[in-house]
Amino acid sequence: MKLEATARDRLDAYGFEEHEGLYYQLYQDHKDDRHPNGELVYPYDFVCVDDIFWQTDPDTEDMAFDYLNTSFGARQDWSTTIQKVNQLNAQAPLNVVYKLLFMARHGQGFHNVAYARYTQDWNYWKVRSTDGDITWGPDAKLTPLGEQQAVANNVSWKQQLESGCPVPTRFYVSPCNRSLATLFGTWNDIEIPQPKVLENLRETMGLHPCNKRSTKYDISCQFPTVVFEDGFPEQDVRHELYPPEERELLHEQFLRVNGALQQIFLDAPQDEIISVTSHAGTIRAAVVVTGHRRFTIPTGGMIPMVIKATKRNIT
Image (cartoon, rainbow, N blue to C red; front, side, top):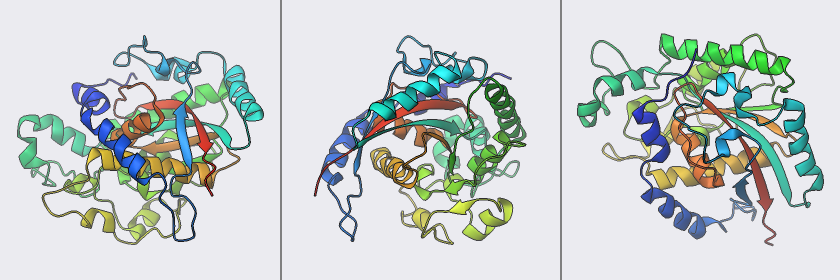
């Protein structure tokens, strides 16, 4: 199976550029914020490392790139690729760490089908949950095609594991059902550590019912092997923070995903290879935060990113 990118996928990756400048200003305004205990909220500065995966090459055509059949985009064999990451960490100063993140997007959800069906009238349908034929909210589920896309990733992962790619030692996932289902479909029959659910990995919050998550209880019933970050609330209080006609702005989401990367680097200081399953908007935000080139990710797609994190020495 080849995962096909759409015009909407490209818009998600390249559109709304004005929010990138707004993010940089927002980050400057908040980069020295501190928790009540005095620790920095954003202690790390992030930069993407080029030349390890083809996706960083500006000449790689993202709309046609087939990562499933090109070793996920690795320029060299897995032994050499992982050795490069090992060497970067071995040679790094004490305040610098490198991690390889496999950033996976959930498979096709019913909200994706609804958007394709009602593109011209989406302003009407986006605040609704069903058209009487399909239901896409709250907490949109995978379609049968979305489930097949997860299976395709499972097949490809098993091939890459046989070729020397290691299983990530940490797994993080959005609390949205479509991301959780994609994670477990992708890693079916492969032994992995317990995935941790992070609120900051979710899609844009507010307004759209498809992005309102289920309760913690319902998530734990359907996906009993996950663990939750400390303080994960039972109800989706974040969705309810937004008035009925408003939603999180993209530059605000970019800063939130910066926070998710901070969480991951602080939570897994010794882990070099990490799996993250989330959304198009989350991956776009990570691209902006790290300076990775813009890259279109289809539903069910994945992009590996080697990220350099430099801890700022501020007392």
